[in-house]
Amino acid sequence: MYKAITQDIEVTVAPSFLPEHSSPDTRRYVWAYAVEIINHGTEPVRLCARHWIITDANGNVEEVHGPGVVGEQPTLDPGEVYRYTSGCPLSTTSGIMTGQYEMERSTGERFLVDVPPFSLDLPDSFRTVH
Image (cartoon, one colour):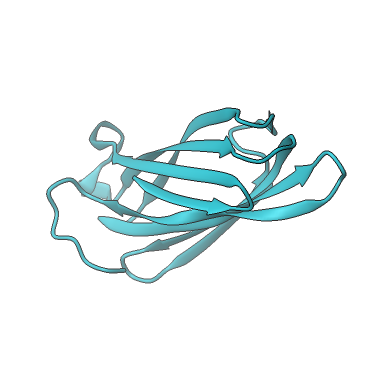
């Protein structure tokens, strides 16, 4: 698992390879990643938007921007946990993802929360630093 804490917001990511959705013959490798977001602060925050930076083993970079996550813009009260799972296809057998969430306080102030960089690697594969 990978973890980052920014301004009292903790983000933990656990990636897993999905062989049943992958096809090595067509160079399609798919991972799921489970995300847990915890509000350790003293006021509610809303997750407004996401920004992902996805880099494959060849160094190709794709950026993804969008509102919320998995079609939701959840509000987390102090101490509340929000969990979701999403996926990422690559044309290589490994890669790395990182990014940020744009959050909003009840005052309207917006701030960025880091998503920790996390590796997308095949199970039992030789691990390299990307």
